[in-house]
Image (cartoon, rainbow, N blue to C red; front, side, top):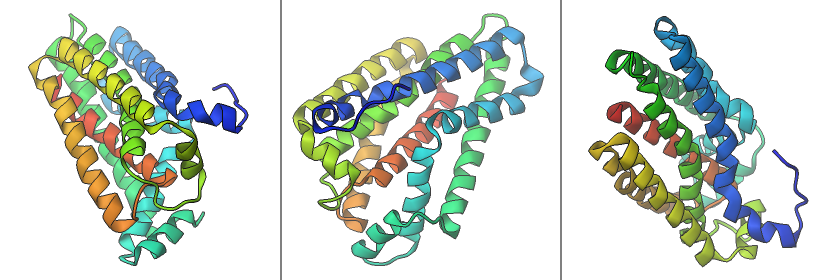
Length: 247
């Protein structure tokens, strides 16, 4: 990814291009799934699923997984909002953070194995992997578009931190509009590619965002960078599960 200087002039626009950060991850997933389809690897669906689960972690450096782990530790503390926010800032990982990471990778791997197995079983000759690859690749963009909407809708947990600085420099209406347009476009793509079942995408994401907002306000008083990472990871997990049902 290109390196950009973090100055006020450039930071005003960075959040607007957040979904673009999912493009290289999605492209890598699509490439891997096409290789799976063209090389006819049904006997190695488990191995292919493991690789597909690790690709996003390797390309992002695990930055969003870090948010998932930190938020799991914070929520498991059952402390005050101040204590939970302090845990989010702690660079060390606790027991519940490790458990969250292990369970997340296990869930994603199992879902991807189901997906790869169905790709081979449903249309082994017609190549159903093409349809699945398009949807799988797009979910990394959509998860970040949902996070754009969350940043525009949920107030920061504290008037400090990187997310607060980004959000304070960004026009929230434009940010929410950008995320909404991308989500609607994603729904059209999923419906066109996946059929009637794919219509659950947008309502499911809206419900997910509503429940996420309520929980973050109750436990943390708002949103932070780590919590954005949690939202991205959980959104990708939910969309992968939906994809398994669609294919």
